[in-house]
Length: 80
Image (tube, rainbow, N blue to C red; front, side, top):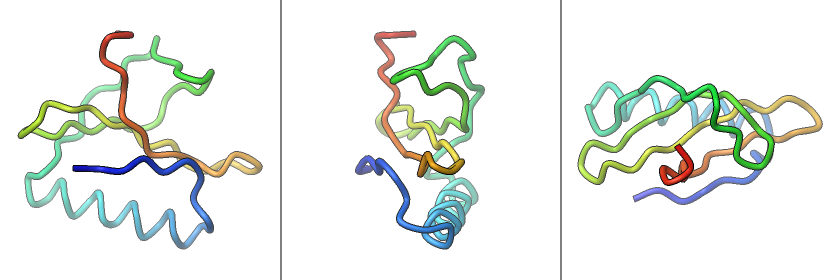
C-alpha cells in the first residue's frame, strides 16, 4: 500500500505528507499506535507509528531535523 520515503525534499513536502497521513487516520485507513521505545532501526529512534488495519503493516514517520531529512518506512516487526 505504501512506498518508503528516505528524505523529504522540502519542509512543505513533509507538511503535505503529514496532512495526507492525518486524513488517512480520519478516514480510518490507518491507526496511530504507540511507539516501541526500543526500536531504533538505522540508529534512528522515535517518531510516530501507524498501522494499516487491512494488512497489519506498521509504518513510522520521522520528522525532518536538519541535516536529517526525515523518513517514512515500514517497521520491521521481527525486530520487536
